[in-house]
Amino acid sequence: VDLLRVFRYDTVQPHEQLTNPGSSPHTDWGTMTIVWQDTAGGLQMYCHEHKTWNDVVPKDDDGQVIRFFVHVGDFLSLATASSSFAWPSPRHRVLCPIRLSKGENHGERDKRVSLVYFAYPPMGVTLYEARKALQKLSLASQHHDLNDSFSVDDNKHQ
Image: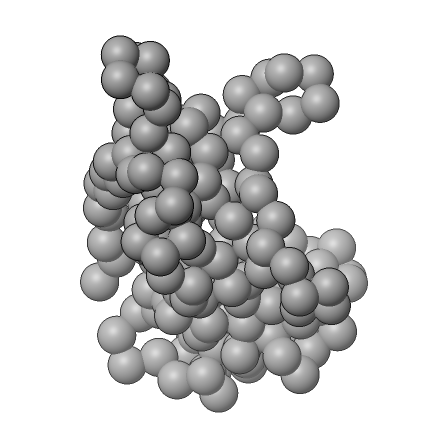
């Protein structure tokens, strides 16, 4: 069962931003997560190599707004762990926007809003079944036979 949620993060005082995060550090346990966010910022990814939190900037180098981000979930990360295309499940958090002086906040800067779609594996699908399906998909892509679709059931080839 997939889930679509709206998150609203109100502003906090500067000294509260790290002690009262909008969302504590975590990974998403499903298959994948699609995040639509406004331009307030606050989404951060953790870099294990450098042991730092990095802002996911809602604008590219040309100033174009980037609204969608895709996170690989724990289930998909585990299903691809032993393959040649392992995808990690990123550790991330959300910091609430900082409250500016009275009267300065307006529009998108007085809150952060995101719409998040959590995709989960079908009920009853095991990691073993998911790995087998991904192996079939990988083999098909190596043979440029992507017109076929695969089921997680070993006996079904649609």
